[in-house]
Length: 80
Picture 1 (cartoon, rainbow, N blue to C red):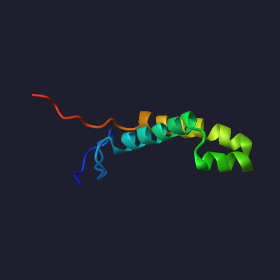
Picture 2: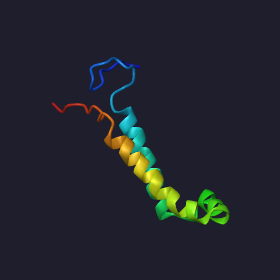
Picture 3: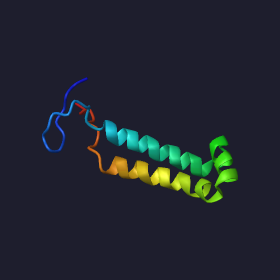
Picture 4: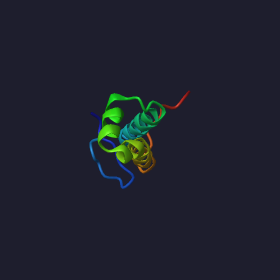
């Protein structure tokens, strides 16, 4: 795994942008859970704690979006 510099210039050993991509993936999972509320996990949660099942997908989406927004952007290859 190549070492890259973060915004602070420290060598952290992670590829630049991995955290942003993970945050975007988490946000997409939350958005899909919002669109498709018949998910088995959400149905089980709604039976046990109805309010939690209603608020969980937007919270997942928000956390993923915040993680992606506060992370270094991924490095894109330059076109020649």
